[in-house]
Image (tube, rainbow, N blue to C red):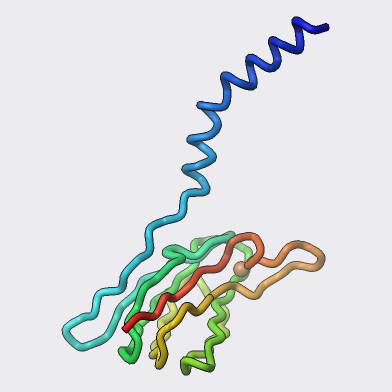
Length: 141
Ligand SMILES: [Cu+2]
């Protein structure tokens, strides 16, 4: 019994360097995406959503300059939404998304970190947000 258990230990031990990098890659945080201010003073951001993510999920924008956010969904049958609830910064959005890009124009009036997410949830399953369909706007000077 004992030698067999050792063999199993050895196999598990040897698999760590193989499994860990794959896991780390899957769970790696993407670097924040910084919106560039165009010549017209608008900050254009392209975003893709799907089950269950938004990409990019960490977006840095400037306060008091309009953000032109274009969001489209990856093809799929699961409906998704975009919610931003930041009335303190003048931004409230709650919209159904589709595979055709939807454009939202809004301006954060205050610096801070404001979450965005999909509010959908099927019955007793975890919400899409809990499954990772969320992100943040980091609003800077
Ligand atoms: Cu969703």
